[in-house]
Amino acid sequence: MAATDFELLLNRVKTTIADNLNTKLGVIDTDKNDGITLAQVDSAAYDFQELQGAAMSYNPFVAVQIEDVETEGYGAATVNTITIGVTLFLSDPGDDTGWKRMLRYGRALQEVIEGNFSEIETGARLKVTSRVPDKIRLLNNAAETRVVGIAIQATIA
Image 1 (cartoon, helix red, strand yellow):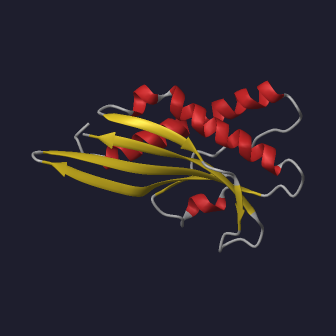
Image 2 (cartoon, helix red, strand yellow; image 1 turned 90 degrees about the horizontal axis):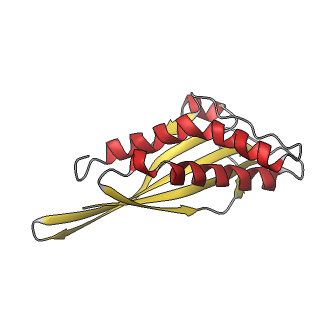
């Protein structure tokens, strides 16, 4: 991977999540075995770099976005640090399972990235942090939406 090929890094993150998330959700459902079944993410339900378009009509859907880029030059060398946000959006089920579902989706996102570092990290050091589950109201929907996600910070020298 070229030193500053953010596009390739974003594509690897998105592909890794799309290829592995539903399998991980099934593993978590089996592990918990408490009657709560996590909805699978449709292959068309991934939004890339913008929160508009067809992906938003799915429930759940996942957004993959650049959140921050920091570049520091040191003589002839430059270090780039990019933060990629991966956020899962789910319509609030309207019962007491919403918070459990979001913790499980967050766990799945984190475990998918951590379990597939080698598919993503060529030339970059990765750091994954979890985000606190929250409720929001999307502009295109009157219902409350639950969100959870991770931030992936990659330092590319």
